[in-house]
Image (tube, rainbow, N blue to C red; front, side):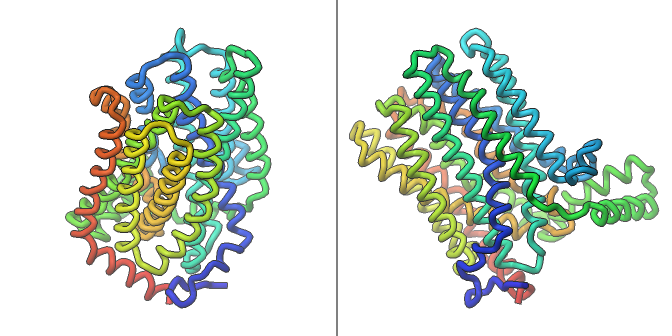
Length: 460
């Protein structure tokens, strides 16, 4: 059945498609590693006495998410021996990366970050690389669950994928924080290390469910890739290896600029790079801020994770529906303003001191803004992707967005230190950071509206 995405037919019923459960699980698998290298690693380093700057610079490991497009073509073409034939090309890559993450947690459980900081950060880098690699094939498997003509289902799938990601991140964070606090209260000195061992169980459970997701045969995709390689070898005179490289790497990159033009293409990439930098600066230091303000791990788990997950789920689904009806430009403008406004709420919290009700309100409003911004952003870059090179181009665009959020936001701890711990001013600055992206969006508004209208005509 094909469902159009026009304003008259896009409604909530599309969320009840059983394929959305599969996409939800894929999102959870994608989001959970961020608990490990974000929330858990950050608090682990903080509670072991390391500085804010050290914690902030440790966040550079997130930078690998900005470069996974470089090896995305390899993930698209290289088959995992035995596993690919047994469970499918996409799932074999996901499972392999999950095994690496499990092994990394086992190693973390045996080290002390004070004495082995380099080793801890290196293992965190391995987790990040594995997570970034599995994201390439998770996005591809998500997209391939829905036929390309099902526009509303594809948009709903993007929203559900975001819900799944936040579910893995938020609820996974609740489990990690609660478990770590329980073990700490039991007087266990290496409570974080023991927590990592318990978290392996969650990963195993997700992978058992992963095996239930059907995967289309990759035979047709491999045949088309071989045809493209043969064409390049014949027309351009490239030898085998060069033809393979060009057909898998160069073509996906150049097709983006052929489709949009160089100037518009660069502007689109600039917007993607800039849009969520302010949110990333705030998010990177938020857990440290909560801790310094006097909130316990249970408080953070309750307000930032549990309540945050509920609001994120609800408003991501609503945000997906709004984005379908309002169009990309309006949705992205609203999302940018909302992100800036909620960042200011944290300045108020910093200036007024510890307040549970203000903490709850600030976190909930921030999660609402983040949910709407994320689904609008994912839907937007999904529209830019050339379906001929879905996996590689989506990885490229998503990586550029991650590049701005990780490389620049890694200096967030140093910025707080430079401000002498003035959290109020810090959050004001994060609100201002959204302005450049909105300026670029204003200049691109006619091009983006044209893309929206063209795709709605195709869907109709």
